Image 1 (cartoon, protein in one colour):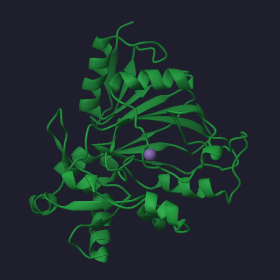
Image 2 (cartoon, protein in one colour; image 1 turned 60 degrees about the vertical axis):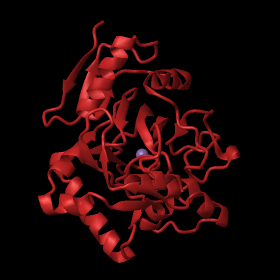
Image 3 (cartoon, rainbow, N blue to C red; image 1 turned 60 degrees about the horizontal axis):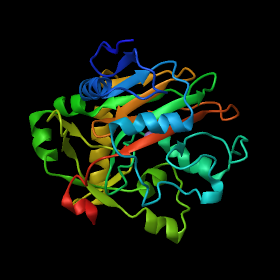
Amino acid sequence: MSLSIRGFPNGFGGEVEGVDCSRPVSPEAVAAIEAGMDRYAVLVFRDQPLSDEQQIAFTRHFGQLEKYETPGDIRKPSDRRLGAGIADFSNLTPAGRIMSADDRIWLFKLADQLWHSDSSYRPVTAKYSLLSGRIIPSSGANTEFADMRAAYDGLDERTKAEVEDLVCEHSLIYSRGAIGFTELTEEERENFRPVRHPLVRKHPRTGRKSLFLSSHAGAIVGWTIPEARMFLRDLTEHATQREFVYSHRWRPNDLVMWDNRVTMHRARRFDRNEIRDVRRTTLTDDAPVIAEAAR
Ligand code: MN
């Protein structure tokens, strides 16, 4: 079985064939997938039924798993349905029932339907995320991806100069606040205190520049909040025009991998009375993007 990658028509995203993600992958195949990620930023692997352990093992071919020193959500250990190393993006309770409409975790996770980059609220952001579709609702529930390299390239020169050295503050408080989820405990607020990242990033392997936007970004250092929010909203609107977007329509057992450093994504709405069971493994980036990020 030889690995091949077919890029999507606009050069953003691609589909990988000839790899079994449930088994150890050769160094040559890992290198080919990494090269594919450098080029396409989002890769789709179809027909990959995976156990959580297999998903974790496949993910670790490409780097180090995120360790979650700082919490990324509001779940307590007793609220968790899955084991260590894999994050639950389902609408299921630990007992396997569909969350109620007023379930606090459901409400918190709804903000994943805003454009974002995973873990941009952490001092060290995410490198790749790998999302495995185990149970897919009958309609809706696409995941959309936006190419932040093309978005950067598409800025006019004046805006490129303006964004070049800007630093944003990212926090889960901002993204949740954007949908009116503001009831956080003191401890949660402390866990979610803002971190700083540059608005323009350079990919460590390709050298390409990209916009580092996210719904978690709610402030620009040195700017007033309203002007910062308005500018970030404008940039996000620019960056998520259809020509920069790939919309993934899930089939059960799809595995989708994306580079958070050069993309944003969002979940789309679905009937909350149907089960959506998708599970994510996440790799950490090597270091804070800028020294200030370490706080
Ligand atoms: Mn996400």
